[in-house]
Image 1 (tube, rainbow, N blue to C red):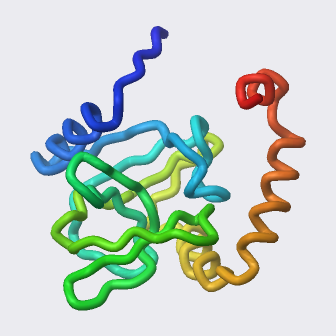
Image 2 (image 1 turned 90 degrees about the vertical axis):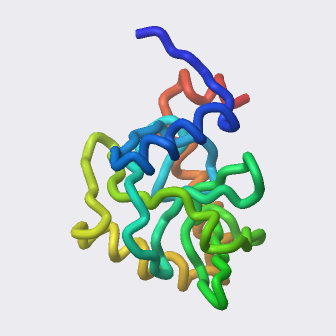
Length: 160
């Protein structure tokens, strides 16, 4: 299969349009900001329409014009959303709720499909991980150490 790389500023508006038309869209995760629960290049993310938002939901938002981010909602107040990546210790994005473009509804992780609204495993991740923020730095460091140790050799060479 041939792989085609398309810049996010071109690709993601098309994804958002499909979702607004009532479709679901599946993309391969890119980036490390949602570690340890969503892994770059390994996991597939299935986005659907925004049918309500809650703290803990993972969303795709256009935080500024043409700049899309997929992170977990940390807080919602006065029409504003604050979100942070699971793999981020510092740094949040704050933007109007109207900038939310899609909601993560399923994740294919290590070949297993998680439907976020019904998966007890995913709900547990979503409830516990954000509360570990003070310890997150150490847990992420341990995760990276273990993950890099178990990673196939061909991936290690690409990351150098």
